[in-house]
Amino acid sequence: MAGVFPGIIRVRCMADKKPRDRRNESEGILDRVNREVESRPLIDRTKKHFKADDAPEDDWAELWGRRIGRVLSVVLVILVIGWIFSFLAESGS
Image 1 (cartoon, rainbow, N blue to C red):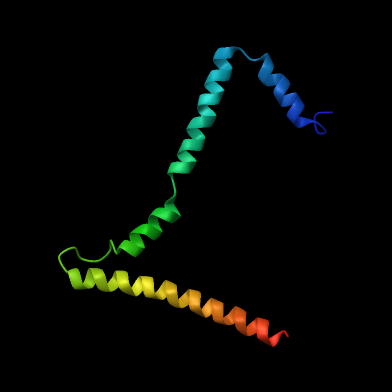
Image 2: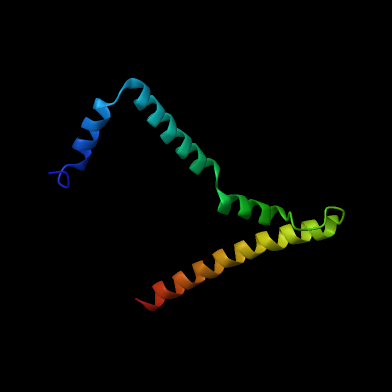
């Protein structure tokens, strides 16, 4: 029966717990969710990449050159993907 209705059994177990235990479990779940939401390594790395944090701070030309180059590379990739899709759509007709 446990395999058929796992949610119902879990709710019953939660109802049997004391309020303090339920509160501790809820706080633990919320802490885990907050850690997962706050830790966005891919997004943070991408932001640092496009801000050109790896460029020397004292060389403004290098800093802006990297920023412009990285933005243009994204625009170019989007254009190439669009071109491929339009090419495939026309050749399929």
